[in-house]
Image (cartoon, rainbow, N blue to C red):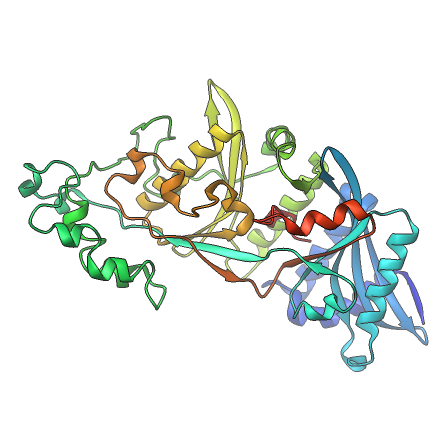
Amino acid sequence: MTIALADWHDILTVLRESYQIWSPGLRKDEYHEYIWRQINHPWARRNYKFFVLKHNSQVVASCKLYTVNLTYRGRSYLFGGIGAIYSMKAVRGCGYGREIVTEIVDYCFNNDYDGTILFSDIDPEFYDRLGFTEFGSADFSVHLPKQQVAAEFSSSDSAGGPCSTGSNGSAGSIGSAGSAGSIGSSGSSGSAGSAGSIGSAGMTGSAVFTAGTDVTGIASAATDTSDVNYVDDTDVPTMIAIYSKWQRSQPFAYQRSELYLQYKLGRERYLAEHSTLAWPRLEITYAVENGIQTGYALTERGGKNLRILEIVGTESARHQLWNTLVENAIQQSMHKLRGWESVVSDLYPSFRLDGVIDDAVKKCRHFPPLTSTQRTWGRPMYMPFETELEKLVDYFPCPILELDHL
């Protein structure tokens, strides 16, 4: 049994099989190009290795090893990021997957890494038996109230003013259906809202937020996706400058360089341009304070869901971004916000949007509590070689951002 760096022939041997499960809507030739581009990216040439395990000169398993840095308490730690662990079909059940992971962990330990990290798409018990510990890996979601239109405003509320509960006040306080449905058993935003789109009486009288209106520093709301800004390499220097300052305030975080971010964004861009799965393009929203960009949010949309990958910046910038994202999402008739638990650290400990958005955005809307589910993919696990790193797993919410998924 030997482990070695793969040549392109070895890699193609693996790709012919892994295409069935890991080609995200790409043709075979596109999938090969997708991997080739990654391997030959300037960041990857220094930080990405493709290993294969061979038995009798035949490839039986493979994996990738990324060299990444995590910062913790002002110090940088070298980690080996293990990804794309694959056992060839003909030899499944022979323990080669376990063998290659063990070999890579040994390689990292013997080459002065401070630990290893991976993201499990299978039952984490497999890696737990190898000595890995799971971080928090929850997904959050929250249903958004519907956008109000002028026809929904009733003159009968003039005596009671905005948010008047009036004669229909019990319905306006979300009503029995609303309180029962802090999301509803089916998870649909409409089941709770059928008692009046979050209680029509409760919403009546609130001001309509229209495109071009500025509210307490919130960026102008977009009523359609024509105002969406898609991220590209010209954003990278600004993103890194903002991220580097923000990172110092985090319990621990990936250390990013411009090359690293270009590598990550390049992968996403290739899929958005070539995948038949309507792969979403990454969008960027900036927070501006005194004419300076001090924060950004990275998002993507799938159907009526807005997925938030990260919100980065000063505290006031993040506050502004939450307001902007929520208002824009409502104006665009999005149904739900979603993301990894790392995104909602600003909402701790209540985990309610009400705690981070302004009254101008709240208006008379009802925002139900966030709900969380355990992810079945991308579950971060690590094996520290340094004692001081053993406490990383104690942080909640887990601060690892989705873009840093290997």
